[in-house]
Length: 347
Length: 281
Image (cartoon, rainbow over all chains, first blue to last red; front, top):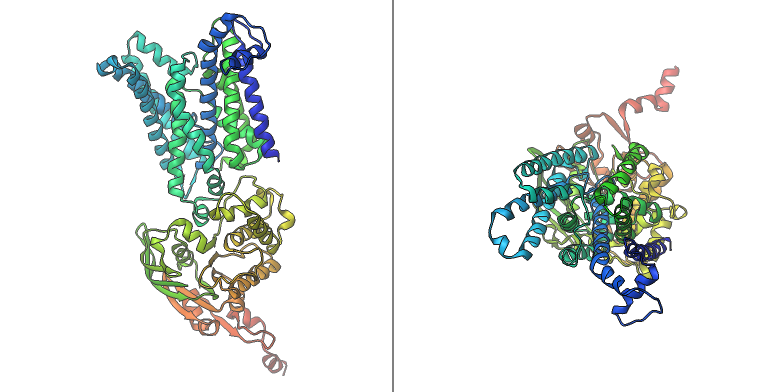
């Protein structure tokens, strides 16, 4: 009951946030006007007055950005829930354990390579997918590495996991630093963009670019939710109950990193969403992954949309990188989490 | 139902099991005993399909364990392990429902009835909405047993189905941490299931419980099968001295239809009436 209620509540909240975020900016539109403009395309005419140029601003500028935020937020939320289930550990966050750093390092290396190889100049679309693939590869390798290092006796020890995360991040950042040193002016600007995280580059092209990489995990991860529940009993017990544990772990790693890497490839490192969101959702729905996974996707979308709305309005007409906002909210939350649960989770 | 032939297991470079062979039929309640490190749990884990690298053959209901997919294993046998580490606040009923995973992630009406039956059988029905981590150790153990029961049952009634040749239940120290009442209930449940045809194999430490409930005993020593047979055949002072290094007396009591194993030191405390009469002279 509470479970289906939470999902409905989050869905309604997400729709409202999308309407408000799309309407907010230099040219203000009311949520009703936004709705009217959106429905106009489907042939439904609402009796709401709006200016002609509003439609252009909405379709060309606002909507791709809001949708990109929704997609990346949902991807980070769902990946956070999946990773916490995989590591059987509530502190597993793609940013904290270095997955995002791995993705961003691979992306930065790719930026440098792309300039050196003439193939990429002739086919611009190749650029984008190569970047996505590089980020994905970097993320998968980091996840596998952390999982291998941190796992002792079927459970990821928190301290080992976080220490491995620190080490991986240091390594990735040093490589990123090296690339920065070697980069020219134009490359430097794109590299800075990775490390801060921003949805400023949003266009329909970027939306289409990340769409498959996030939609696939969004569809497939909820199907693994029952098995994730069993995994929280322990890997052995999950196997006894009929879960193909090895295959489940592979699926989780591939799908979660796919979602994270797609986000990193277009928007850089946006931290803490994967950590905060499953926690907040869990407070209301309990630990059942069948609700937690879709709930985390919805709540992640809401949270990133709101954060992006804040960062493009509080210093308007300039804008803050959204990674700064999520870190300002996320880091104190992380500290609170450590204090609250230090007895139970830092074992 | 179960034929284990010449299984050997090494973990790292340490040999854990050495050419163990045993057989057990449908409806038997078998108990594995042995000193710490004798390989009891490892033997159970091999049968449970946890190790892929054992040598030898394990045959369950006519199928070679190596060739059985995980789901088929889960439909044939249920396992209750030691040291369960669930720390998420799942309500008890959700934990027990996890036992039905292998029968499909959607819970049908019979599934729910089986879950209720398992909760009631293990006397945790009144705890069904409590968060699992808030339970005591013995209550947790009973909830886990209910989960395992939910995985095993085909009907929402212990007596409704004949499981001969179809189901196997593996219990690794199932009563550790339970009070004496629930120890008895758990083992009576094991006996009931055995009467319905389930092959039950349990690792136990308690001689009294083993003597009272086991139909067949497997005594392990240093990774090998040391003795096997009925309680009377296996529980002799010589066997126990060899396997556990303790001097014991095996006593018969007129009100008790199984032998009592008492450590010799303890037996010395209770002198027989004849000795006491002599001392009084």
